[in-house]
Length: 365
Image (cartoon, rainbow, N blue to C red; front, top):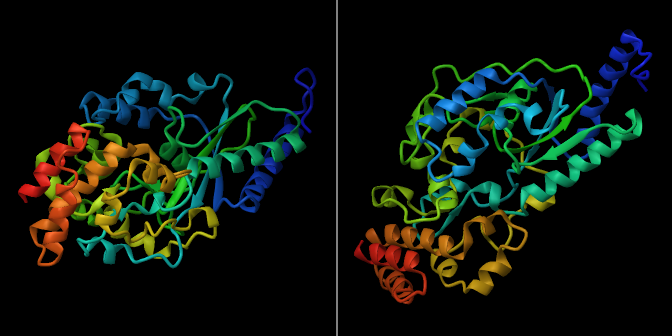
């Protein structure tokens, strides 16, 4: 244990925290994380990019991004006393699920982003981070910390890059050279002066596969995403009508979009998750659109209990599926065409004006 604040030996303190940092990475793996790293709080370059992104309005309806401003890029403003950030990642790609491309190519099915097929990742990672903090405290004694899992104004990808867990790719997701990008991130803000790791180096090179594949061209330039065009934003974050020009481009994606990850060459190294909580539930890796559209509100709440899908809400869920059914109707043959029209017509007088408007659009297809 390091010396007291009044009588510390700098050399023994440095050795103690170096050893602690080593052990933190071991404990993190024992707790189910794929990797852990330690970042300092120097995010000036990322802050400039964030503020420029906000100034351009590319955050769309996500007003909280603007409200939090620079607190997101200044860990010490968010949690006073923070010296380092322990960044962790956990793989989530489920083994044995239906091939994503096969789902995307079948208009009768709905595509759910692979991260949302199982239990809500916030709960899984937060519990493991708390366990990690308790292991640290057992060795170092009580210390100041706060755990975050996409739950506060935190620049998690920038911190993970600073912690050596990978680099931010041209699609703005974090990429790890050994594991691709199918993983969640979490953080422990700490007041302990742990030795930081070397930041991750960029290995995107001249590749632009993610830029070219994006259905709505939301990656407006390398490392620049306009959320207002992004299918993940349109189907999850946005609460209003989906702009008409984007509806045909959404295809059968009813919750999020993974195209930029599916084409990334680094994901050939991605390992399936060993975490049972991330296994697909209720057949959501390849669900029938008409079946999803027929869910009552009670069924929606039942099947999305403990799931990230709950975030979109029942109205947003039906809005998204109506768009997907409209896209399926465009090229459908009998008897699928008649069945799709029946499903849509049944929602023609839905209590939600949002749903009714998207149903009308779908029937026009």
